[in-house]
Image (cartoon, rainbow, N blue to C red):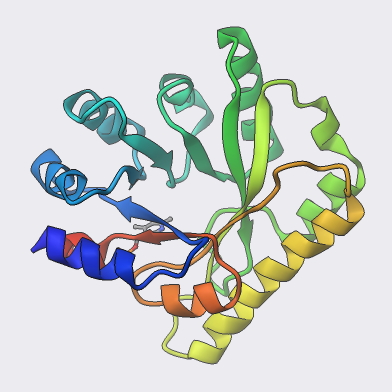
Length: 218
Ligand SMILES: *Cc1c(COP(=O)(O)O)cnc(C)c1O
């Protein structure tokens, strides 16, 4: 079942869009099924869960951390994950950079932007991001590679609102690239989940984070 869902989903993605299989709350057996069907990139939203699962999966499994990350839980992720998608504050970014430098490695991250209507979602506001890049604060990073933006649309059945949210995130990334033409490799747009990834792709997503449509409900 998982293999079928995965292959159907993956086959429907256009070139240039990569699949992050969101495996949070699912047992390692489910991840192994997806791995056997060819999936290599998995998304987890809790540090402990990711650290428990990682040693039980083949070494070439790539992990994306996608949940809210408390500063006291960053350390075990450094060197373990291939990307932290959910960097939602300068403080967190600074800490990731320091811990990565101490370990002598570079951590790839996305900055999470908040455009959805819900107040509960984490992330930089568009204004904060423009200020961050306008002030060229990224030049201080020593061991962090800013790879792009991650964002979620408003949780609504109004698909035009969803599309507008994704378009806003995509437009923000273009604006940042204009302000900072020297910024290299700021290419990823992580947008789209099970219910809205097709719209996200139409609006320019390069990474879709899909859980339920592959693994079933949590
Ligand atoms: C859980 C989660 C997803 C996957 O959502 P589905 O609706 O199950 O596809 C994607 N992104 C984030 C940040 C999540 O927490």
